[in-house]
Image (tube, rainbow, N blue to C red; front, side, top):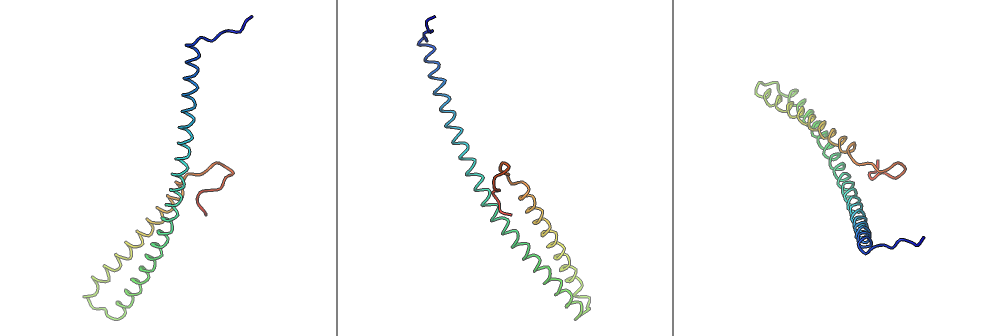
Length: 128
C-alpha cells in the first residue's frame, strides 16, 4: 500500500497544533520562573519579618520587666492613694504588652507554618 498523502489542510492544522504547543510550553516555563522568583521573595520577606518579630518580642519583654520593676518601687516607696491609679494603668500596660507579645509570637508561628514547602528531598527555602 502506498503511504497516505497528507492534505494541505491537515498539514496546516498539524503545523498550527505544533506552534500552539510550543507557545504553551514557553508560557509554562515563564510561569515556573515567575513562581520561583515569588517563592524567593517570600523567603526573604519571611526572614526579615521573623528577625523583626524576634527583636520586637525582646523589646516588649524588656519593657514589661521595666514596668514591673517601676511598679514595685512605686508601691514600696509610697502607698499614697494618688499613686494607685497610676499603678493600675501601668499594670494594664504590662498586660497589654504581654498580649501583644503573645500575638506577635502567634503571627510568627503562623508565618512559619504557612510558608510553601518544596518537594521532598530538596532543601527548604527557610533556614531553621
